[in-house]
Each structure stands twice: as C-alpha cells, then as structure tokens.
Image (tube, rainbow, N blue to C red; front, side, top):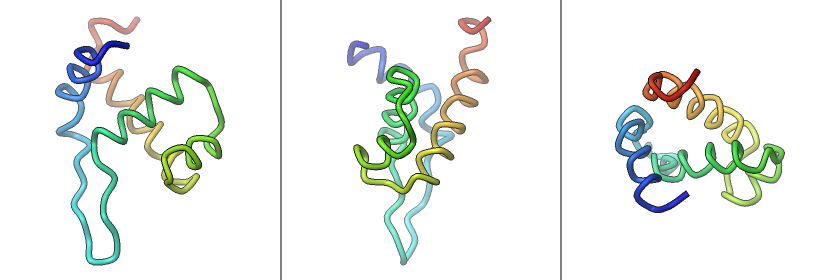
Length: 81
C-alpha cells in the first residue's frame, strides 16, 4: 500500500477512531489503530504477534481489529462486495 492510500483510508475512518487520553494512560492514535487493523488483514497473524509488534495488549489488538474492519466496511461500501 502506498502512503497516499493509507492517508486516504485514515481520512475516511480516522475521525471515528479518535479516543481521548486519560490520567491513567495515553490513548492509541487513529493512525496506529489503522496500522494494527491493516497489518492483521494483510498478514493474518495472531493478536499476540500484533500486540508484540505494536506494544498494545492482546485484548486491545483484537478490539482494534474488529473496530477497523467494521469502519472500513461502513465507510467504503462502494468498494466492498
């Protein structure tokens, strides 16, 4: 995937993935969330490998993958059959 395609996807679904920081933790950015979701779709790897690669928990990785897939389907209906 070229950089322009990545940023196109980020512009389409990024605003719906933004989370706020709390006093206990810094949120995972929309850019990193999209990276996690796309990496899973491209590689088919495990959540464990994603959590190690992106330094997030396994539960966060699985939740992010579900969220990214749902948003991609909702936002890009004209491309998904």
